Image (cartoon, rainbow, N blue to C red; front, top):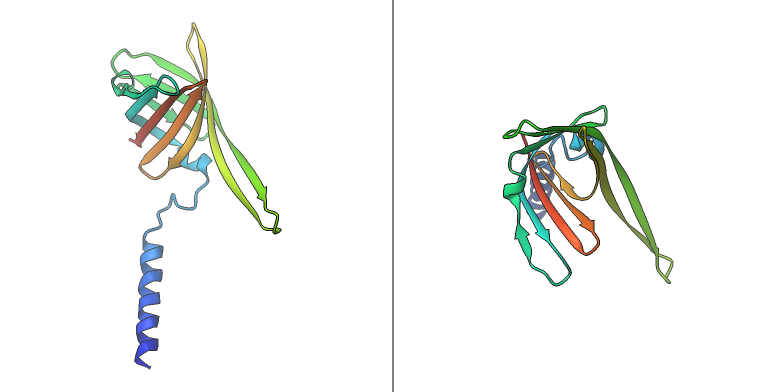
Length: 155
């Protein structure tokens, strides 16, 4: 009888801790999670396949990106006052794998796409989302053999 109470107590504690660790962001869609204002904490650039990553955060540290619910984005540079605006959206890609024994599995990737325009230029961005939490956004951007890794925090 004592083992039943101990097992029940352990399961109850596990359930309480599991539910307590959930936040309002745990079950939100990526589209809802991205909404807000973000600043760059760390940006690295790898210039090629056999090259080392270089920390280029200083090039981004004055920029904030505000992703709004109406799918517009506003990028601001606090030092220069420069502002860029555009649109954003998130795409979901799911790959399904079928094994010979009849089992299936899948993996899902999320891609954040946005464009930013000024009076003289328009730039398109495609970021592969690593994770979005209540506090942080991690993403990567690939162009040819080059890779940029972004770590941003919510303001």
